[in-house]
Length: 183
Length: 116
Image (cartoon, rainbow over all chains, first blue to last red; front, side, top):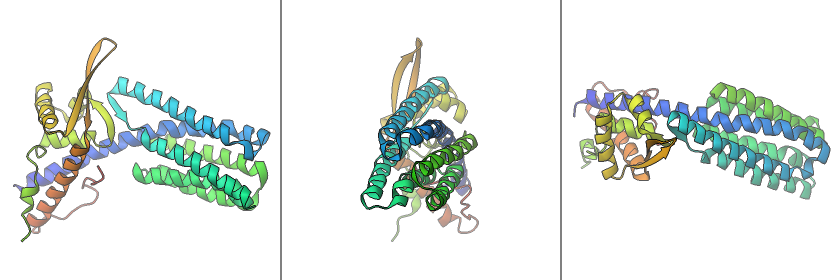
């Protein structure tokens, strides 16, 4: 086999893969932008109902993000003839919900205020970091690391429901920037 | 004795358009024929022949839908297709590094990722 033909085939395949990776990253901007909106909506709710009663609202928010993303993915498929997988986002949502609830409960159970306040957010940021690796997105990776840093700062400086509300607002801002960069 | 990498080349996959189809579908849930045609710059007939060969080999699956009164053919890569693409890329890389020990230098920026 001609090595030049083999190299050409590899180069063309790489180019096609890069195009697909770009499409997948762009598609991921949809749930991330919606998640940012959900965190903004949850901000005042955290202050009103308290951080320990936020679980159901987070669950509903993640469910709504998933449902709207699914509808949006279907519409894009109809219009552009390309449909991305939604399961990477679903994995993030399940980890954020399950892991977040477990971290919050463990924090309350063991009397660790920092785990109760920052734990669910750290789980969320770690899930997004894994997503960044999966979709090979530097923007999502930077956002996830920024979120982790924010959670550590907030856990060390603030307490109570305010700490949760501040993290929600900060995460929303970071997600907005990240989704704008990948869209 | 190690088998020469030329034997790892899959005849069903080893063709410019077929490799392009598999690479364009990897990572996506599905794409329609029109998208593939535009992406790969091929004619309907040419694409149709290659899609048929890939489907017969179990590497892609096609489904037809009618939305807004317009028939549409969707194509998705199968698990076997993803494996075949990954193996083909590996085989080509091995082949190039063996024959091209003279001139070929792998360039990570231009090499396709094996994560299909």
